[in-house]
Length: 334
Image (tube, rainbow, N blue to C red; front, side, top):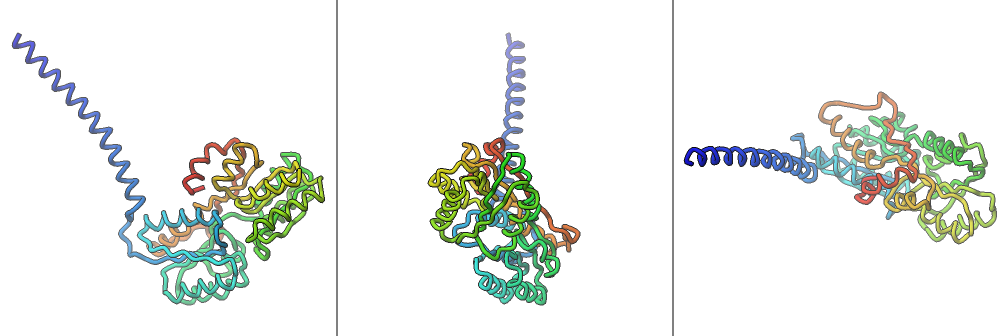
């Protein structure tokens, strides 16, 4: 009996050891995962100096696209121990003044968009003269190298437009309306011109005041009412897609609404079939990689692209992919 109790104790002890070991292993992995997540959210992963990087964009107020760009930039800034400053203005002269202000602050790096490159050239040159490295993002890929930037991160707008033209062809569309919401933005012109290059149907441009959504809606509605043969409307930004949907409804049109860029609303409308497709240029990556590459240049003299843009798009997103992207759009990273 005593011998039986001894073996029972040994067996029980071994079982407990195995059980505790397994729990320790699982718990240890979970703890490690939690530690890594916390580090990514709030603590730097490097011990390099706390450099200051400024991002200056041509965004207007309330444009959700730029919230996603900032989300990526801020995440990289935390990881890289960077003090990140963000400012924006949709008027080119004011945007240039913001670049000048960053130069005056003697920041360690500048990230800038070149939607209206002629207005930005002198400001970028001043940054270069001050020895501040510059990376361009989103718009201005053709001018980036000539302006002296280290590299450009974004989507080739002409290539993206061509992808839209190809997709319209696949869908059997014959007449499309391309809605430009910011006059003078070279990237927008390149998008529509790219569509026209590959689209086998007829393409018309419609210029609207993108800061006035009721005006945008009424302008699209008027076009759809005047020309019932328009079977596709292409908007150049996610916030304008839903406005085009409303215009289609009020006009009694059956035109398909397609758009450049993603947000949670676009993902939802792709899923329920309200929209046909979207073109994702991955703005999160544009912000993240811009900060990360500036850090790599400051730390190690690294440059990507070999004189060519670092492309983050285009990716055509349809109803089939919408569900998988929903979680990302809801958290503001796609």
